[in-house]
Image (cartoon, rainbow, N blue to C red):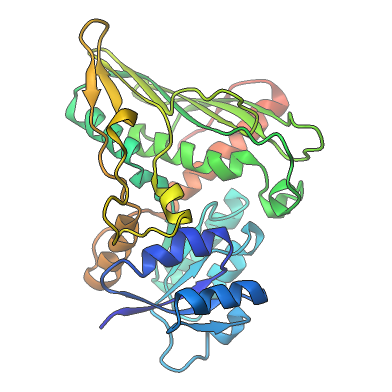
Length: 351
């Protein structure tokens, strides 16, 4: 029998990144969506006519038959309260990034998860970007040799400031680009090279009228000596390479973004032909000067996150992502903010 899923929130996160994936993965059934906005309620009914639409999360907990999984895709400040309510009700939970607005809140959620014996899955879907999957394979295989520097960018040209909670300076909202795109970049670097020992950061607010950070550089020093240089920006009129990895044997460079977000926004799902496939002209290059060749990009596969959730809940398999990893990412974010304030390198410690 399929696991019954309740999705809380049907903004961009819920409508683009969660509902299409949930409904594409064997073993999951999208049973309910929580949203109060009339336009979004209509959108759910049009695309998923068999799904129940409710106007408040409190309606979920006493629902007949209950739910096997809750997905929290609400604004950031609601992530921890909704996840805690789900766990208290006895339901495992997926939480969109960032899991929490602070390390302390994430640790409190981890403590409740342990007490209840129920998993919390941080939605770090960018581990299933095609370019990152390719980079992970090259690093693991030794094709690059010893990795000296890992450069990773999520850059955009969005000079106009849009009003909303993502521009909030209230710490509870976890606004700004460091919590948004930075969560993904830091998670990818930590997943590849481990918990960093030192962090240096430059966190800036560049756009006229902006209140929260929109242009950030973070440098991580990992225990093995690899350095990760991470850029995230809304002010980049020209984009740098998406990934550039410099190793003792070879380098790997790839530009452009993974196609999955654009495809999901256009209405495609993993069930459609061509989903997640990067065109040959966007493939990266592997090698050395005079000896470089195109390196085919692995298919992107955001659906594999949810397939991993199914395996964990049904078979007890290791989770695709863990709260401990998300807490490390938040520690890096807090260390980056401190580095900027104090204009110094911050030692992260053992956690």
